[in-house]
Picture 1 (tube, rainbow, N blue to C red):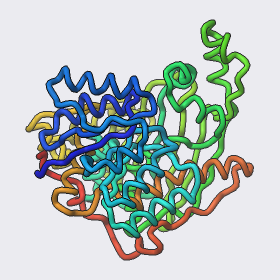
Picture 2: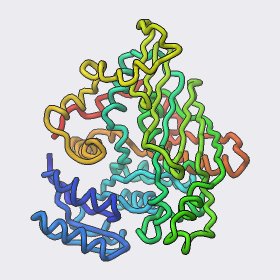
Picture 3: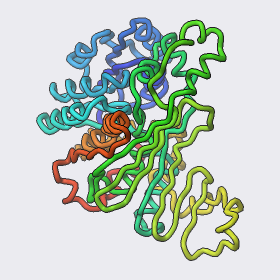
Picture 4: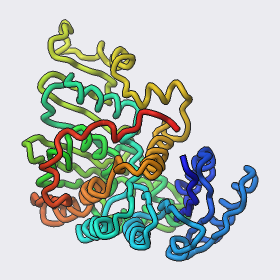
Length: 412
């Protein structure tokens, strides 16, 4: 693996963690540039790197274009607020510097087309860092689907089901962008964690595509109730009216007639889940119960009481765990979110090193990010169905069953 001189844009909680706890584990990375709108974040991150024994980055700037333009930087990582993902990625591609971008929803369909156009005109490598595509069980289920265990896939469920009330309500104090997102928008604002693995399972952009979408939002009550019960927040934000609905349900129809249902659920009390459920003609997988059902298996009385089978996915791990994770377990799991952060980042650099297509490319990014803008439109128009753009301009028809070689099987 050759050495990459990396510049990082965005040093909030997630971005700073990527730098100090993840990039420092990769011996083929030189961290040569740091950028954030807040100078104290730059200084703090640089200090942490120094304490770990790493050289001080040559470029430290509050101007993200200056970071990208710096001659010391040959590869760009964007971990900034959602609103800056597309502009920074487009500019990086325009000057010929490969770029990987953290996840988030798009603000408009024009943004998505701008991203695609920038890639097609420049040919500069781009990847969306959707780590959940590399989740241990998401990949196991993909492997089972590819081997036909669930038959013909008819429907998938997923969700971003995560209690974020404290993070959103204290966003101004923490300088977190989510406060303004929930204040001003009503949409499926964070779709890619669930839709990424589902899109791979359903061959989206590779023989199949999303063709229409409809979204329904509940009223907004969770944040107001949370703030009202906390004096320090109530004094500042007790009269604040948030537009974002507590629950947003989105249904997507695919070209092959299959469907997808995803849920945003972040401002009411709940446990964390991505809610993956895969339904096929021969069986199903359900994350919530960590269970697999295969047609032809004998589960006496299971149609009335499935609970004895909860957790039975462990029986399938030895045979059906994806080769990526079998190898990963042998060599030692690294990084956060159970190890998938390391996998997605390493896959980006592997693709750069080998000159192979990105496993999560610009067409995937545009498609998945577009869900936010389309859901916002659907909700604002009374939950009217809206058409889904084809960002591949018809090329999805010519590729069938994307081969799993695009998911690496070795850890470098």
